[in-house]
Length: 341
Ligand SMILES: NC(=O)c1ccc[n+]([C@@H]2O[C@H](COP(=O)([O-])OP(=O)(O)OC[C@H]3O[C@@H](n4cnc5c(N)ncnc54)[C@H](O)[C@@H]3O)[C@@H](O)[C@H]2O)c1
Image 1 (cartoon, rainbow, N blue to C red):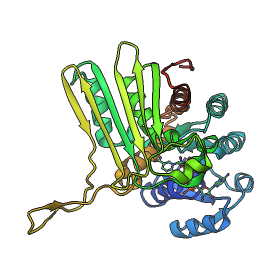
Image 2 (cartoon, rainbow, N blue to C red):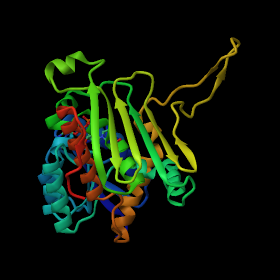
Image 3 (tube, protein in one colour):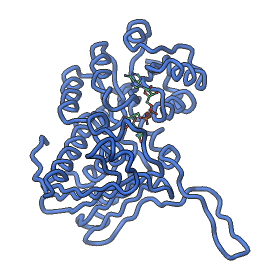
């Protein structure tokens, strides 16, 4: 295989991050076609990245284009149907997170791709962020001893679009905003969770709560693992001040901090003796390397016939945690993990 040939399905915010990487920064890839149910969006996106073929129909694209892999970046509740079509056509799949909006849908996806034997990688790009990866290696080399507490903060500046307010479509704000934090915590802990709890409330988006009574915009989730570590995820949107993704990992012999709110831009020193630097404005900039490296890894796993990382099982576990957390939120008490592992 000289180049891995891709079709992108869903050419919005996340889709265009992948489209730009596939066309501009990964010589081993060719983006052959763009599919988006919004025809104008399909054309505009294809024009931007210089892709000649675009369509509103995935069926047409799968039957006419010679492609090896599908990159799914459509809305979460559409992922399963697209996976079904891609699997039926024998294509490998890179899918944006969260894998699906419910455990049931996620299980169907996992079973489908495992049975078909196609490569399926889920878009948890934080596993390819250089600092987070290095921290994981340090933890697993024993640098800070045994894990005690993992903290992961994930906050976004703006209120996400309204389809995300609807838990039945997005899996809820926890799935949309903090699937990455959940996956990172599970990856660092490397074991089955024991107990999950969630508190949440709506502080900034009464319009969303009015439409969806179970909507929340800020939350705290705890995940406890048998014999440790303890973990805590706090997240929310819209916080306004930045895209803020940070971790702190406490061990018995030290602590590791990852990430900062301040961006990489210049620092302005003013005559008022202040130092001014911009904060990270968006996820696509904060995790630029992660998005590029995750796609390169997916291509390598196709070319070299390696196991995708993170896998369908990893995607599934994150959705399981979201559902457990929502159960705990609804019941106002911690829930024992009763999912598959
Ligand atoms: N990895 C990350 O950090 C990250 C960041 C943002 C979004 N996401 C995920 O990416 C997915 C898309 O989110 P977004 O913010 O880019 O949304 P978006 O609204 O910006 O873009 C989605 C695009 O998909 C199209 N679409 C919808 N249904 C479709 C279908 N059935 N077939 C083809 N196209 C379809 C829409 O017309 C739209 O252009 C979501 O699952 C979201 O959770 C991941």
